[in-house]
Image (cartoon, rainbow, N blue to C red; front, side, top):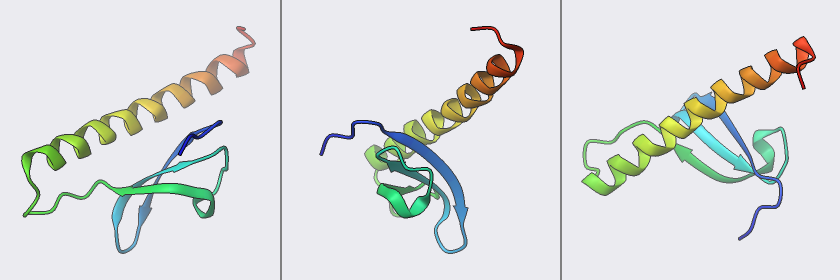
Length: 78
């Protein structure tokens, strides 16, 4: 499935822990096309652990970039 205007949202779910949601432009978790829990399970294989680590890194980088965009927009840089 192709997402035209993909957005990455992160939040803490009471049952699933830290969750990453990918939406097609929506700002709400209700619009999520994909949900991935970042909590590690004891029975995961190496590939799944690596995938979760990459997704977690990308989610953190996404948060950092959003903050930077907000800061630059407030300063009127671009």
